[in-house]
Amino acid sequence: VMEIGYNPKDLWRQIAYQYEEIQSETDWLNHYIATGEIECVEDCVRNIIDSCKAILENTEHLKGEPM
Image (cartoon, one colour):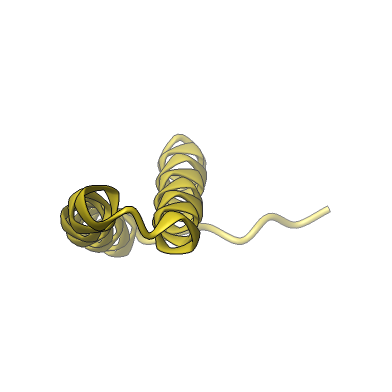
């Protein structure tokens, strides 16, 4: 079984991007909490979870073999 390597620089760039997405979603989350828009709160939380999962996946790839 051949594993595909990942470019660490690209992985760090993706992690930084996901972190920025989390920051943006957090700003919106604060707004929706203040306005009581529960569906939007749920969407923000799901988006934050997805970004966290992407960060975890990229950190796992960083532990693997570089290209």
